[in-house]
Length: 263
Image (tube, rainbow, N blue to C red):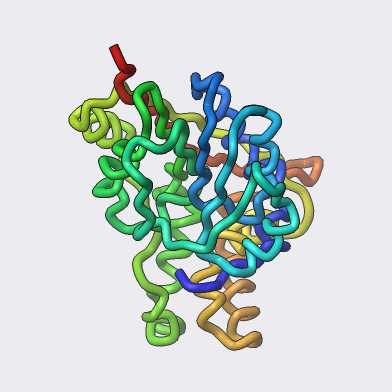
């Protein structure tokens, strides 16, 4: 992905983006975890709070964005919490070295990430847990309208270098793959109805996530034009209510996979 991320824009909806993370962690049964990895840790705000959740653990946050890790680094705790610049697609844990591998809203940026699940499971000790959540709203108007816009004649040539669009698999596919790898998988989905305020809040939300690969390829004037065009498109799909609040439905897919316990 390169360093296309803006921590300030991503954190503009920090509470809403972190809530699925803690809903995921709540379903992870690993009370005595000693070694935890957070894949796609971003600015490290949630990662740092894992020290309180697992007081005996050392935690490693991994991300591919230097800008994100610059902010995360300020939260490092010697001997307990550190951050590392790495590509999730290339990261390989030492077999049997970890208790928990987490990932919050990051794996959909890794094309073909299903092929990596087995290697991440192999990095867990008996009784370890692989837990992640990914967006499940790629067929929602917010994303359909974005794909249509960047494929339009105005933007097609300028944005051809954006690479693969983010994407995730169905709950059933994740369950089938993980059980096929010998894990005990729990899979579910939740739709959050985020109550957003301010002008064009859905466009503002996407400006910190799905729009980033496209905006990063454009000069400032063109980026502003793309953002304005997208805001106009989603304004009709997500109109504000009488009180000015815009409800933004956001479906997410959750997966918790446990590896076999010794004995």
